[in-house]
Length: 143
Image (cartoon, rainbow, N blue to C red; front, side):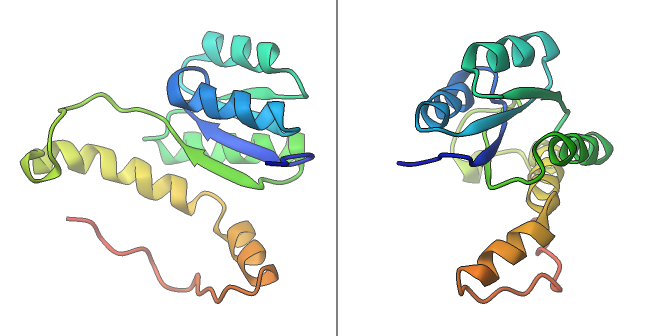
């Protein structure tokens, strides 16, 4: 794939699946904004990746932290072209139907916040691609 001049935000991008995604995108010309809660790992990964990649310390379960990372990314890179949600929140491991509702309630806001981080830019890209989009509707409640 060609990611030349694309700016990718990867939550949890300092290690694991997020890091693997980052390596692939950089290999194909992209720049990575590594959003990770671990500052040291994120900065090391950004340096190792190169291609103007950079780190933003963010707690994806905290809306103010997500907004600050978004603003820092837009200030440094000017835009966000790709968003990969790979941040892990440790919890139970098992089938969804067995997942504790209270435990899921701690994770769901983080998922919602990531989706809502840059809706205006997403709407613009969707419309440019000819895909109908309505951002005026709130995301449905997950309960």
